[in-house]
Length: 339
Ligand code: SAM
Image 1: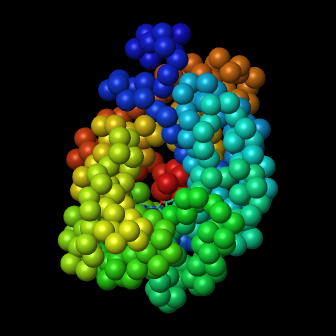
Image 2: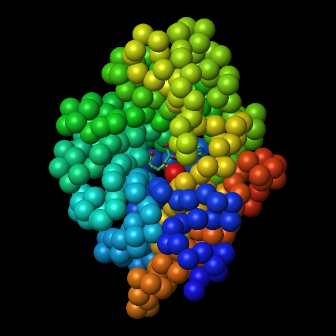
Image 3: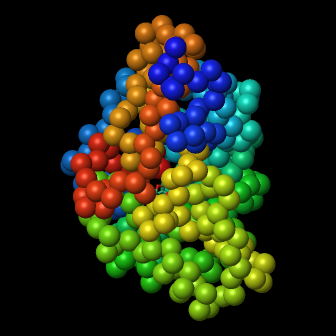
């Protein structure tokens, strides 16, 4: 029996009583962009070796066990998930897993124009596209690729084929794009899509993070409410974003504030990395290896035991780790965790 507080119930409960219901699966650590708040310098990247990356059947097996333990929602991410060939096959497999209610994806949008329809047909529900600037030169500077028109076409295509919800994520970084917050909001409002601003977290590969570069959610709300009438809708239980609706009914705005107002106490997310490690917190330093179990003939029961045990040890969260803000020896950058 796993060391999970001698629980007899088969749910993913941790020491603090939080129950995991959502899973983020990173299907690759590779990315064709090199966003400066995420990836290391090109010549310092060491990709996970191909043979260490989980196959679709291995991911599916782990998802099946996780679903039997209460996981209901899946988000596919990376790296850039759409670099993984035939990803729609994995989507279809996960969508048809008993207990899974929805499968969404976070992408940089590069392959979205071509992939939106097959993904929709495979059962993908919604897509969140990262968009950190609407100025081509700046987009290229932040993401390392001159791709703005292509990403915008991907967003239009996602809307056309009926992926729902289509959302936009922006990491606001002081001195880089914080003067574009209102433009990004206007872009989203025109299309009536939701926009989320994420506070910059110390998970970047360049080591450029410091608290002065974080644009706190409160500052964004102050700036936005000078132009628009907003209504606070709060943060739903276990959600990452605090939601503000525009009073004229044109879309909404979400703030994800792990740095200034962490929301760890009701966190219900766990992560599976591309090389098969289970992480129960973005800031966890303990990586629980599920690939070893899958590849060495372990049964679903063995997997369930290991998963229950590792989720039980979920850290309290970044809100309880003040040293993180002082600079910490992070085990992996965001691209290899799966944001
Ligand atoms: N390649 C995809 C993309 O660009 O959306 C998915 C992976 S990316 C790691 C997932 C999300 O994490 C993106 O919205 C990205 O902007 C965000 N992200 C990456 N590094 C971050 C950091 N240091 N702080 C906050 N958010 C970050």
